[in-house]
Length: 139
Image 1 (cartoon, rainbow, N blue to C red):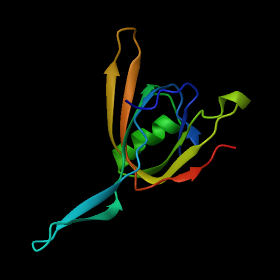
Image 2 (cartoon, rainbow, N blue to C red; image 1 turned 180 degrees about the horizontal axis):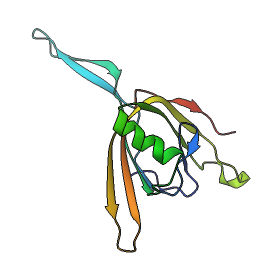
Image 3 (cartoon, helix red, strand yellow; image 1 turned 30 degrees about the vertical axis):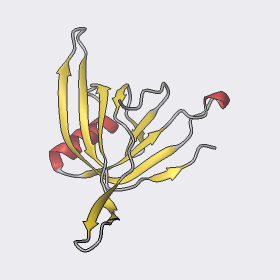
């Protein structure tokens, strides 16, 4: 489904991405492994390593952008990483945004450009995040 809350901000290397159209789900997960003993009717489940999350970020494309969109394009082209931050609008009553999820070293591995019927171009970037983010709670 994805994050569809008005006021959500995405930053790349500390810079707002601009006209955000869609953002994938925020998911926290660990791999698991099951062990079944041959001599007992039991199952042991072990928590494994942190599973890196995948995100898609869709924006109205701005080829003249020198900030976040350029950083994403450069990351695909040059195989470099970015800081990826999502700030949710979970404190709308006081007029401010809130909880921040920040990943250092996110890998941007794909950009898809889609021509829209109204003359706009939409860029969809695919990112893989390295484990759990730093979470800063809403004030």
